[in-house]
Image 1 (spheres, rainbow, N blue to C red):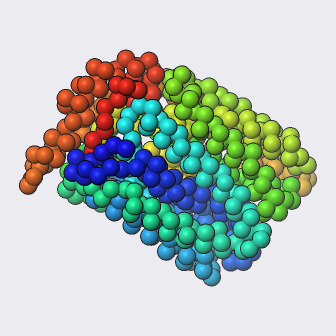
Image 2 (cartoon, one colour; image 1 turned 90 degrees about the vertical axis):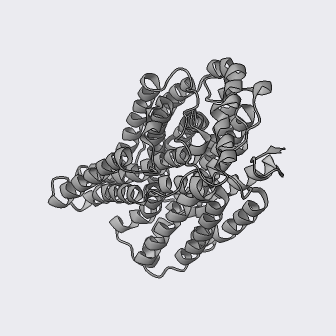
Length: 531
């Protein structure tokens, strides 16, 4: 037990905090992939066309990723527990509405609203974890569990989706979230303290959120529509140009006009933060597109049912979870940079193996082998990425850093899925006219996996040339505005970069440099974290 806040002296249970964060993260991660194996059933039941079907996935990941920065900053502004509870309530209600949907528009709208709830949950949950566990071994273990839940949730989602679709009804891939949201809310009220990070910012950057969300939404829309609108069409070019203008406007506004920026651009000057977020985007593209296209390959090419397709993902699930848990031990022995290089290479090899899938393939050769190699490569990456992405970030900007990392994950997946759908469609259309439908589909899916392999190679180059060899020290956040009782709050917030910060630097600096893990001290030198 340790104290979680200077204003709240009651002891906080680390186990309770970890359970709360795990349930919340499991729910939002599971919903990234749980619908994948149910897509054919959804198409039949609600009358989706092929292009509209991808929006069942994209609507969720797009609003999730587009609003994560706002969700992270709102957690810093209003407090983590209120945002967590609000997000869980919204997620549960919209899941119920999605399970009762009667047409494609209703389901897509429910999925988009789910993404809004997830954008409130994810950064608040990660910020609760990083500010509740002292830097060093305790936080490393907590991040290991968090990363395992994140990876396992997305992986187990396809299994759960298969079971529910096969034995009950596809609607239960949505309805299953309702009891999970209730459990998460109950845990949050019991274990997450009400105090914490509710007095740092005075206003929310709504303009920045609108620019970022509209820009990314238009970008994904343009990419998704390339299956019906050619790349050279006025619609595609116009959408891409407007998206570029909006996103450029976001960065200009954040850097010059925003008084309380959604994203303080100075955070991106931390090479560990910027490089790890770029790396996360590449990994996320691989994970999202793998679940989507392997599921389609299993059902549309190999002819498996929803349950069989879900069970075929079990080796991939286990590899991701085991890799994430074992990464904590690896991180204690090797720098994060080395793990990202080696893991990225192994993952690229696995994806290249996936690119060799055959129309008459078998589970052992075309699924099991590449699944094990890919998952053992990608699984151990998530912990060092999360560690590097929050290294050197001031505690009063923990929500911002958490939102940025989750944005990289979700936007990478959303943009990647839209892009790879266009790649698959182009490769399928370019196949020989004499090829069967299964051969044309296999050609398209194989091209996606080859592109994924190339992206992981690029991620390795990011780690080699951009990720610093040593983790940075804390980056001070913007000064808090004075107000009634601000003196005590300012003193509490100044601790990480004041006397306590110097104490950590004196006692934990060498350990930090030797491990390269981004911790502010290790073992007996760790200082009790006070928010």
